[in-house]
Image (cartoon, rainbow, N blue to C red; front, top):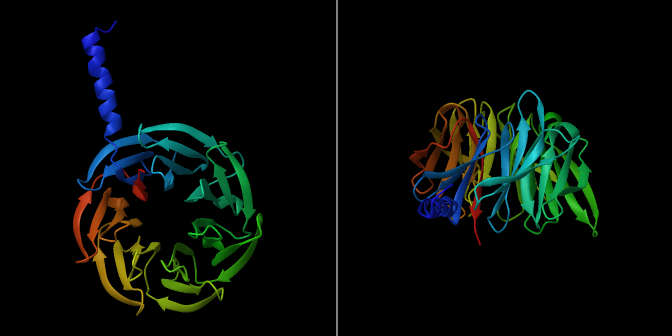
Length: 325
């Protein structure tokens, strides 16, 4: 039996733990620990950790910043679940069983729903949090459909298909139909991002060191950059569209390109296994997961220098912003 005084202390402690999640948070997945870390970006402190399924790779956050959706990719055994996490209460609400859908990876939140790739099944799917069900599937017919992006108007989607050396452009036709266009690119396209003006898709090839630039309206590659990266992993634009950041996993480097001239500005040596990239909405800093060093490198995008490191756990990779409204 607890005395009233101790009951009050426990209740206060619990409320403080919930209040620790900042209204603006950096969300980081730790693959080896199977956890999601909630970080206060102003201090760099980890405010909480939540268990996920095995091998969490990518995460999307709801528009109101209250919930995270984690694709549990698995390790040797392919994963088939999505963790739904309450970021305010700092707990997993439930784990969605995807049945035959294997290797959920790329995650995107749009129009109240979660779009994700099922890599083994060569498709993208949509999870409805309100109904707690997968309510839509669309096959790509491409091998290793790995990442997915959704345009701001929700009328276009883009997938990077590593095994088929292609990008798929998916366009809405009518209220329920979709058209798909497969665009051949270089070897092993994995990293992918949409330019802020919505006109281009850039994808970095993990197996030949190149970058393909796709004109979305023309649905074709207009330029290929021969960067000679060793194994590119992620590619991100800054919000102003001026810079492109590319992580080179094998070389342990972050490439910084001028988006207009398509030329390298700088290369930062960050450590073993440079993977996930996330740029702040205000464009002041970038966060880069250095998986082999178990930290997040903080990059000042004004000086293009490392301004600090954040330790979130073992094997950090996928990241997202949570801005609570």
